[in-house]
Image (cartoon, rainbow over all chains, first blue to last red; front, side, top):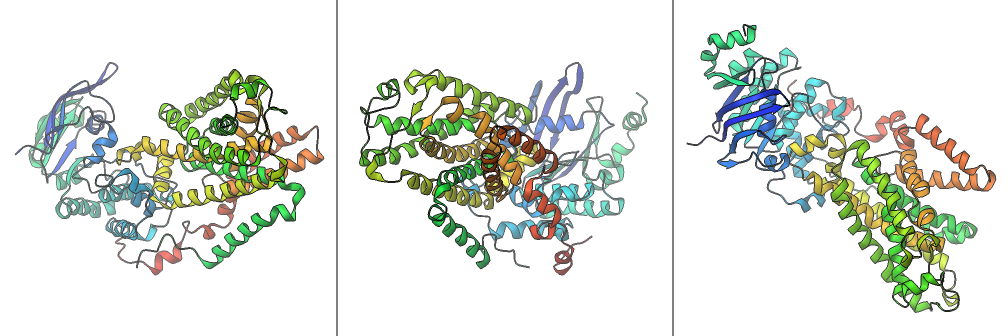
Length: 247
Length: 359
């Protein structure tokens, strides 16, 4: 079976800096796949390339068998491929519920539906998902007034209400209170199991990613260094060297 | 808990709106000597509301909205004249005199076709200009629109068919029609009411949330799949439609169209519309309305009591507003009385309805 996301030999340079060098990887439908690597190894650049944030220098990116490397960000998003940001991005001047309502998918509806009145059903779904991430009590607060960790949870909920087929999360646990991390891992797994969302996760917290992912890719210096099941990655000497700076 | 209905209107609100409508209808009879100023006020309300839709709600600070006013001013006047006479001959004769007279039917027909034409042409201008410049962000957009306003004025000043730099007079109403000022007043009042209603409705729809999302983080909105370009252009087009009609009325109110001092007047209404929105409170529904009222009253007081120094006084006022009221009247009220605005710190509601929060 073809993978949901197929990245083939993708390269990306910024001036003289090679951020991604001929990277190939697959994300199969229904799985949770991890992406790790030391700082500056090109993880976020790869994410940005996939969702069309910048053009790639070479290679191909296929989503559900369709070439998407030439599409623009909103077009890719409407195909059901959504990413969240490392530096959390929410709509600070709007309440949590409003953030959720406007994040509902534009896939199945037309542009003109924007002019219909806000449906009670949409608000209910928004509140359900805010409850799912534990923000129900804060739903009428301005999103900009939430703490960083809460904004991260809100961004996750916004991605969920968009009903993507695949969700790319850039460091979902960074900046989140350690006691909440277990709850978040649980929610990520439930999003995968209950909502059927394929997850592709960048993570620095090894405990989290080893717990979460079925298969892990490791980048270093813009190249794919290793891949395998969590325990294989944990014992891979190249990966350990990359993290401890033996390069 | 059931989700609250979003669109209900309370009786208190209905009464409030009713009072405003009645006052608006009676105003020309109660204060007949201020009819022109009040007509101008309703047009200012339209200017401020439409500026705020794009500048306040969507975060695209435009100094070029005056382009749509100017397009409306000229489009309406050209149709009013052009339906019955040759426009070139009319402007060459410097606005009529005895050759170019309009009877009651002609005058009313001219307005009836001129105002919609103003709306359509202004909307077309917004589609073309919007597609070109709404890709720019922040300061770049602001500077670019500033240039558009100036360029449009220069084009009009160089276009002899429209009277060029010497301007153009709007058709003189026949005596049989009586006080044409009253007609203009009620048209302006109706336009302001319609603008308010449409914008209030837009802000309650998902479209309103979408433009707020673009204001807060446009990259995020794109990443979530919103049709950002189309939404931005649509917002500007909606603003332009009302600005075009307002322009048509504004030209007739002034009776003489100078290309740079009336039609494409970036230095007066172009700046004033921004100022009124900021004074009242950017990004709020009522802010621009309140701002327009306060501004027009202050401006008229300056012109009456500080004649000679009126522009200095206005300049000082602009500085004071920007320094001391950056959030405007509504913004200041929101800071002082957060509970009146619903979505601020709301502990009580949180505890009452704490359903399944798992923190």
